[in-house]
Length: 218
Image (cartoon, rainbow, N blue to C red; front, side):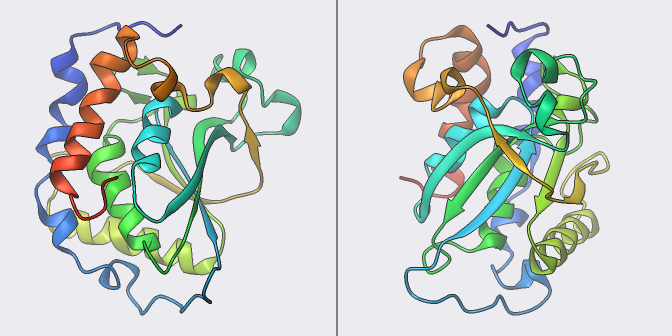
């Protein structure tokens, strides 16, 4: 069980300071070019890391157009893709989520908007709120050149707009492999809504999502 090591005000100060610019950017603009047209029924995959995967998982699960979210590990090797090892911060893995989505209903740039403005604080280096270590780093694991360009363009736009008071430290790196986490980590928030860590750190993210993105919230 995770525990909170610092005041909750510090955890959320940066999360709630993001200006409304993130949602005002048109979906296509965030990629720097028109997004490729997807065939009807086609599903795409995105992988994000933004601290403890419990809350990030829940945020993306509450988006219309997202069909599946799975918590897991990315950045390291298969042999060390286990919670007790990842928690040491020495494996190269980050706690991450794999998001499967219908691009006819929600675009990759829209996922980026939610990731940067609600799911986590992209200015915290190798930590997220009370959790410290490289396994809690901010990272986008791109699946193809289009996702890489979209992520880099979005970061450049946020930086140019001074959307944050501190520099964005999000890594944009190729996805080598995603390893699903242990079963007890899956859908954790929905199964443990009264767990103190969830109440203090993650439920406010869902409320922020509902307020900031009412068109996407479900």
